[in-house]
Image 1: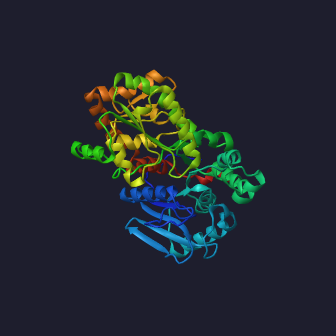
Image 2: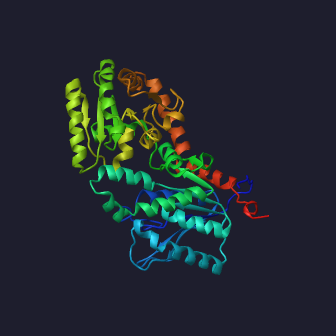
Image 3: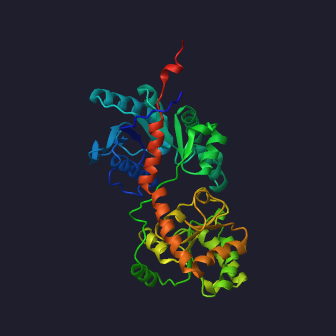
Length: 434
């Protein structure tokens, strides 16, 4: 049973077991990427907000036991599974040892925690056992779902189900995920799609799911003065009426719909251009799909109004947002739309799809504009408005940046997460026989 408690959760046990988790991680090495960034940024914000945080992970190779980040936050490594790197798909065989070693360590050292916050299925499974042992609440963020990954890889990989099962061990993963989603106190999903899958594929109770999107680095994505913006436009050879579309090459992103909307924009603003920064750096499949978009642009007679930028370096991303006059998110379906939130945080007026999570949060004409990309003239008109009216562009720039930074900066995400922690208290007596 869950009841509301007014007392704050001071000691937070975060768990992220696979990969190379460190205070300063080497991103890009095996199993070490976005999830590591996510847990580190949240842990830092929890600490900044006055909570004590242990981020527990696996100790292997020659890693130190602790990374002391600050007075409130440390990375703590528990040895299990030997000294060699273990793929996240093979964590199944070692999680019981982790639970035993961790519980032994905290009891020897007399550490105590108010809540377990686990990440990914491996830490989720272990975190559930630890939470039950310690009789404290357990909150879990999946990051990805085995059932969805299995479906996608079966469709796209070209491998047989037997080959995929041997590599990824989906059967074991889904079974452990199901246990976690049934028994944990709360699930923090990052998108609406993830929430739907949790309910449909795993039978998770809706009242135990909250959607909180991933955060963004508000120090990195921020507005700059007009003089600096002018210099960035010169650096990237952008013009006053340039519209930026940026993201991975996928059908749901609606880049073809965006192209169909551009003739309307160009009729209103003849020198308007689309900066199409889409696709991966060395993806042959992406190049093929972009060639199809180029063919469509030629058929629509707008090819001279498009600059194709297949890949933008990560270190240039924020400056590209700042240099553009408008940002476009034209997705047929978009679980959230973090690229638009990043663009807004940089002070770039944005036009977003009505088929996404961000649309539910913004106020039209104040934070951003929105339209249905399936209606070409509607979307094309919205793209043109900030280019036609400087006052509107300025309002969207200022209010969009304030909104995005407050809603999606890591500190804001951390506060929303802590509200969930503080509202949970496990009452074990209700589960005991009379």
